[in-house]
Image 1: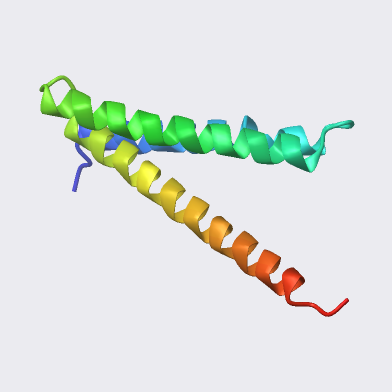
Image 2: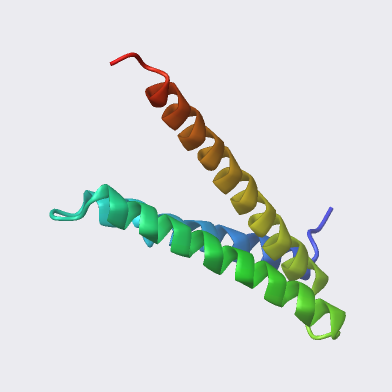
Length: 105
């Protein structure tokens, strides 16, 4: 069974995006000398915001008929995964803060 060219292109695009995200993410900046955790966190937040904006722009382009549905689904899925990750991290930070605050002095 042959893979349609559009699907193959979408998979290749997703693979390139994943490789680019891992190569250019805030994790690489955190390993550089002189960088701090706050720099890493700031970079991660900026990447999350950019991913969410890309998903919104893709959805808007699809509504106006200017985008490929496969690209829109990929962008919206990436935005959803990013939001889920941000919420999970927030929940862990809040739980850690509450645990620290409940410790006796």
